[in-house]
Length: 158
Image (cartoon, rainbow, N blue to C red):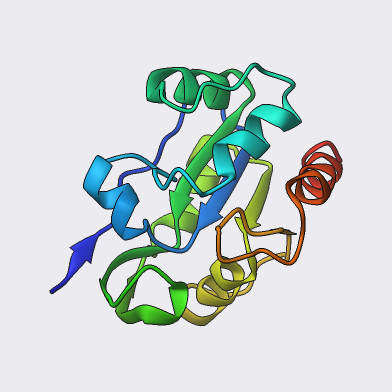
């Protein structure tokens, strides 16, 4: 069965766009980007911006995102997901509106939440600079949270 991704989360003046691959089953069920409580995306983002983290307040999460000029969206607009991993993405329909979205909003930098998002973008949309953050997915257990946070800060502050 085919599932659709969420619309972008974007404030008035985004400078940075972070792209994921496609919302997980848990994210789709709760209707929130990075809704899996084991996914470290929001905790990492709040850490980068030194903001007090509240796991349960989605409106606060969006407010911190927008206040810091960050937008989020996904590379895949629709697919037939099998399980929670990117390797289970079947029949992807790529979000070909992304280049226009970036240009229209004057976004200065596109970052990818993990290498898979970058690979899917190159495969389905086209060439782009390779700015890959360590994946916030719970499946990426190679790095500790502290190591990921250090790399996210380094990449997002340059």
